[in-house]
Length: 270
Image (cartoon, rainbow, N blue to C red; front, side, top):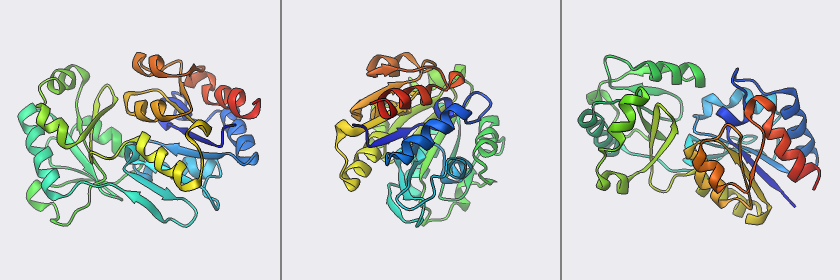
């Protein structure tokens, strides 16, 4: 019996118009009415999920959300932060220097804002700010606060620039951080313990829910750890091949209300 469903947002919960279809909304509502925990689990910052938490009525007592690719778990009713795995000032300086060596744009988030040290602000930084409703600030590195707590950093550029640059990242850098591709033009840099899988696992333990009672649904590389952890790992039809290969079930695409199809099959129908 599934007691917790963790759902990625972009490419999974939302269709290509960034909408929740009526079918998905209805399935989530029915699952929640049945007592199942519905947890949005996203790479987005907390500012970028508020609309969907409200639309799906996921701000009530006992509701939780996982943001920043697992770096933060929060109670959406009390606003209590259950866990927050961050990067410090020294980490951000290190990540910035790597972005310069690779010739990539970069930006980083604290709890409320998005910052870029690039005077020529990358278009995908602007896109991220718009998509997640997060204020964007151009901030040279010598102006970054010493006590900053960064939820995640990102290397961003066109796929034909980003992909070959990723191949040049030294192994030593990858050992210091969790590096995860969340889209063709985003490589996310996280606290080494931060991942969607670890966050879902920790939340399930807190709630007394067994691994076999957890279903996770996603489409991109940053969903791999939660798909692997889940008792039932579900890949969207529009997912990358890696996610499809590790999933227990491939549902319909995000354009065909695939989240609803998975919930109907494993939660509402048994």
